[in-house]
Structure formats: structure tokens, C-alpha cells
Length: 304
Image 1 (cartoon, rainbow, N blue to C red):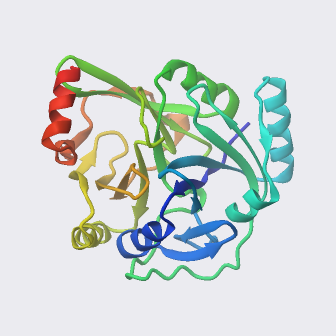
Image 2: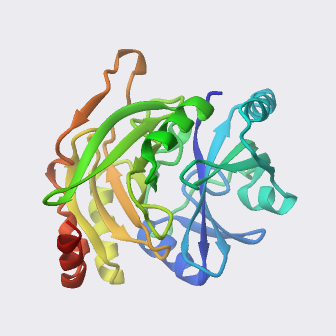
């Protein structure tokens, strides 16, 4: 199958109002009530992030878009042919996500993936409550996220074989001496450098980070100011990534995972791309140590 884009994500929360305030005051998205939750709006669609009430605060699901009913039916048939067990969405699940139809399944690491087609929207223009002109979405999808995959080789192959993803590049993350964790960056059928990355480790919140891209560096700076005014925890300083050239910073969300807020991510012509391994996270900046307190830094050092 050919997945067109990361079309939405779903998060669970014990405090919907925390997400309402965070989305509008810090992210700069508009927030609307939706069947069973909240829809965080960042473009002409009804929502790109959907918030459901739950017992825990966590990342819940990744929504992948197929372009037509025929592609959706073929994808379901392919799942059956590969003996991938999947579940048809309820009408309530489709209503919250504003899609025609959806099925979901889990990858070998336990991450929930949803395949959908068709979206429902009134095409009301995006109007940020804090003046963000727009986010980079469209055919590139809403952005990207990094998901946990302790069994990274098996999970990577599953995504390649079943969802048709391609490997963009690899990073060996070294958070401490004698500690190495692999990150695989993967793309679907559009030019965004990666729509998904796999992190070789456990993540209690279900996600390492979720990335949103804005149209200018000034908007990144304004988001940084809003983050500080709101007292949100900074997770990494401003920097520019080696692989996708995104200039960004990171901060904590109410879901227990980080948000990357960035500008300038490059798009790729996959017919002329060579897979590579980068030995550094960033060309400059991105000090991730600011996101850890003294006790967490000590635990990381002891783990090494």
C-alpha cells in the first residue's frame, strides 16, 4: 500500500481543559468541541490532533491517510493477506476523527496505527487565537512523531512491508557514555523528510515527541515566548537538525511527550535520495540536557 500522509494523531487525557489551554495559548491552534473530545485545528480540516478523555495522559494513535475508497479497500485486503489483525472503527471513533472510515492495528512494538480515507470539514478558515498565520500541512501531512520501538528492526520491517514506508536515514543516539540507541527516520508517499521515526527504547507516554511546522522562524520565536509565559517545561534549546534541516525547539505537552515546534524542514525527491547515517543530532543547538532535572541526569548516567 501507499500511505499518503500522517493525517491526524489521537491523544488521551485525564484533563481535557489542560489540552484546550495548551493548544490555544502555546501551540497557537484553535480548539473546537468534537464528538467524544476536542479537535485541535491547524488548517482547513476540522482537526489534526484529536483529544479523547481517558484515565491516563498519553499519545494514543497515529492516523494515516489513504487517498480513496478503492485504496482503503485494497489496504484492508493487504492486511488480511499478510495476516495482520485489524479492527474496524466504530461510528463514534470515525466521528471524532472526522473521517469516512477507519481501521486500526498495532505494529510489533505495540504502537496503534489507524488507516483512514476521506475527511469531513466545513472548510472554515484557520484562525489562530494568538495570531499564527498557518502551519505547514497539506500533502505533507500534519508533521511527524517519534514512537517507541525496543524491537526496532522487526518494527521497521513491518512498516516497510505493510505500510510501504521507506527509510530516510538513521541516527545512533548517544545520551550518555557507553549508551547507544538507534533512531530510524521513515517517510511515506510525500516529500516530507520523515513522517515517523522509531526510537530504540521504551517510552511510558507512548511517544517521544510530536512535531508541528510553521511558516517562518519568527513564528518559532513567538512560540518560544508563549512557552515561557505559560511556564511550560523546555525540553531542548533552539537548534537545527542534521537530517531534515528543521530549526526548532522542544517543550513538554500535557500528554507527557514533547512537542517539537519548527520551521524550514526540507522536502525530498525520493528518486534521488541516498540513505545515510548521521553521527550528530544537530548542526547546531538542541541542548537536550535542559529537559532533565538533576535526579534524571544522575539516573541516565547510572544507566550507562
